[in-house]
Image (cartoon, rainbow over the protein chains, first blue to last red):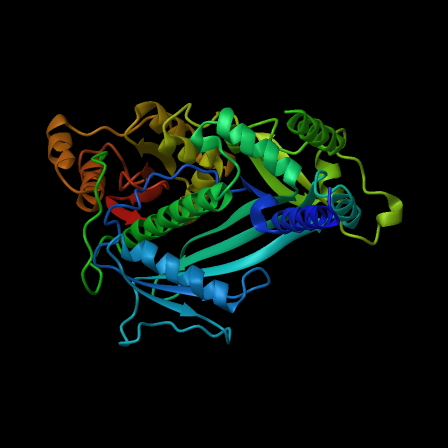
Length: 249
Length: 213
């Protein structure tokens, strides 16, 4: 074997290590697991595909906190706005950076419902020793970062009366390591049905599904409660009648 | 294949070294995790609630806040009963307690309380009624098991009306037909819309209906 061949073999080996490190340090080896805590695992009845808020005016106000910064809060607010717009509502969003959010639409009319969203980081835990072990073992031993978050939702009418409120809590566990990712990838491919899969975008997909379903349900409950408290008098502008159960005396 | 086996063995040894984790993973799936009701609290509080299972925080860590994740298995697994019934029944004590408290505050004096629930499933309606009667009785109210009944013709007419008109009219008819007297209070608990997961209530006093929530 010539010295040139040895040198090129060494270079290939080095390139392989660099490539392996690159893969390990990228998001490929991060497995995020989502666990719904209080409220998020509750069933919801309302179908977000239907026009549940036809003709209603909703103001969605999002307040940045210790978990979501201003740009993430803005993104959340826009997504929640789309959620209600898809259900027939006229929506305005407001990211409150000053802590003094607005109370009416830009055209001066009062909203039918005001949805306030605030995020909180409840708990975060990560072991430095485990991270050291992860690096030494080339991520075969996974590093674990666990955090729990709460999304506080309060829904009021235009006068500020609280119609519904809840704290939607979730727990996320991030495993960083090729080993845990590989095992779960194999289990996803071979054993688990699609709804039980863990790798890929499963965590964010499951959380979004639970969060938007609970938010829709909470807002719908608030809408009916507002109707009852108004003794079913019509709203100042628009709005359809609730679909009634027929269980009357 | 050998590499995969080594990876699996390492993962098993790492996960077995950690305390039991209710999150979905190698040992249990997402549906199993959804049948648990978990909340995060301080280790001290968790120890007070579950002294046999969660140790007291070590004295040397007295100044540091340590957390525990406390999970209880839900009485009914997901899918065992209809979704709306599950939501209503799993929070029945709190929701009916609030309704009974508001009603009780409005109906002062030596009234006899009658309760009925209007819910699509009769067996759930019965549970709601019993819960409300129990709550009122615990508040020291005189509670009757008797449910006021209307004539068949009234029921036919009321059945065709929307709830906003039907309940106030039913209240008037109860009073007119003497199914309810001057010293009777009727608490009606109902679902207004088939898409909601909350209960509403109204109070009938001397022929006047009042929506409570």
